Amino acid sequence: MLPGLLSTQPYQNVRWKSIPSEWQDIYQHNFKKTLFDDYYSGHGFRSSCFRHIVYIYSYIKAKKRPSNDYYAFSLSILACAIEQNIISFKDMVNIYVDLESKLFQSRYLYKMYVVLTSDPNLHEQFPILNPCFVGKNYQIYHILASDECKFISLMKSLSLDYVFNSVEYPFHSQACPLHSNSICQDNIKINSPSYSRNIFSLGGMSIHEVLCDINQIFTSQIYFTPKLQTYDCIGEVASRSHLIPLLKDVFPGIEDNICFEVLDK
Image 1 (cartoon, helix red, strand yellow):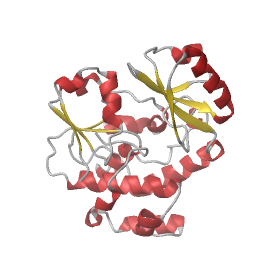
Image 2 (cartoon, one colour):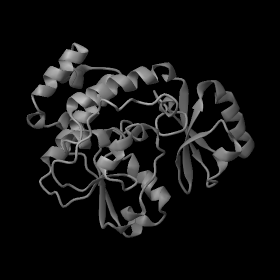
Image 3 (cartoon, one colour):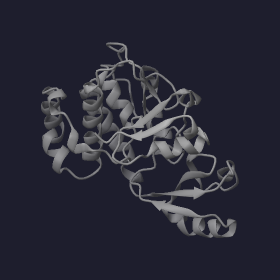
Image 4 (cartoon, helix red, strand yellow):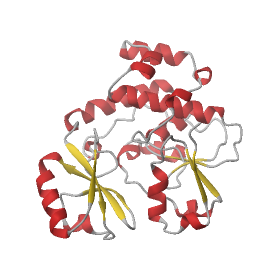
């Protein structure tokens, strides 16, 4: 599994030889800074996004076993789309510029909480909760920062434990501003994959199919296809797992039949 931006990646292991030289020119032309410099010393949302894109692209590019299945989430979907020539790196830059402009006003407007509950309908009873992930034993919600006191009071009244997680933007829930102000993809050329590789979204869709609506990469809740229960071994490309705990919570007992590992190299 190829996780999203909130995962911890071994970014120092990037294979720069696999990165096309023209990426540097495109990046510097648009952002007045080299991709290399932003990768190692950049701070902020843009640097984080392209650091992740570069790393996941280089990881996939180095894999010599196309028989493996890959399941990508969030920004990793775009990295895989570039690697398969479904979109170009220039298209990725244009997507980012449009994305940033539409997210700007929502920056730090929301907070994210992990709530320990087995009630899958909790958010339907309390509209301040915007579900990002709904599992068997815990759920992830975005709430408006201005509703934090209401949230804490609600959790206390329901006797529910929760954990705060810092988040810059509310991706993967109804709180995401792209629901009402979508990324324009009229000028994004979506190509057929240049070769066959088994890469899917977490929900089991092909990367090409996902790219037909770029916005869903950032707006869709976290959902795992039941097919993931059929594998003998599942790894996550990260220094610290982010998706594996969620997968185990969606399919209780899955670890009895599947070997899990964190692929930190």
